[in-house]
Amino acid sequence: MCNVPSRCLRRLLAPLLLLTSLMASASELPRMSHSLTPLKTPVAMPELRLKDMDDELVDITTLKGKVVVVSFWATWCPPCRREMGTLERLHQATAKEGVVILAVNVGEDVEAVFPFLAAMDPQPTYPVLFDSEAEAMEKWGVRGLPTTYVVDRNGLIRYRAIGGREFDHPELIKRVRSCLGECS
Image (spheres, one colour):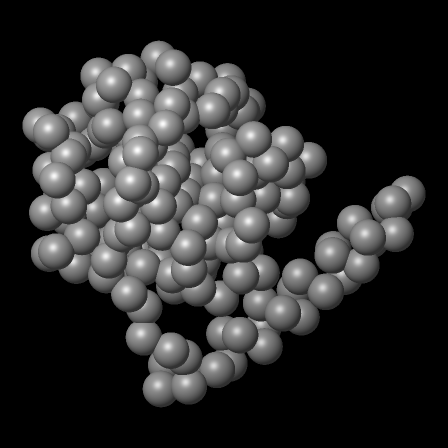
């Protein structure tokens, strides 16, 4: 039972939105970009301490020295769903090099997210975190979903992407890998 009207509405509409968007043909969907927007002045990453699917706390500060791709998303968001597989392919291509993917689900719980992820192909092997109250989303300045940040080895946000991306595109993979050295 929902005590907060907006949450009740979200829980009722989410399955309908998911079904509706799954029925849309690929030709009706806009192309996803394969670019990242560099920040003119890199900024320190905000705090990010959230639980994952196994109810384990993940703290981004423990990942210093690695390049971290932080993607804020939701199951009801069509471009978010489209880019999840490309994030997995980015993860497969770069994990051994020191790139970590963190997918931060906003406003949903494990009961909504687990069946969605189980139906994905490929299924994500990177951590999926839960920002149920959208507090991390606010700290990171996210204004729309999906929004993704690339954090360099020193904990500075170097790139941002608002909207769906083809994270497995060679140009985008090259840009993420550039942060393993000095971001360019």
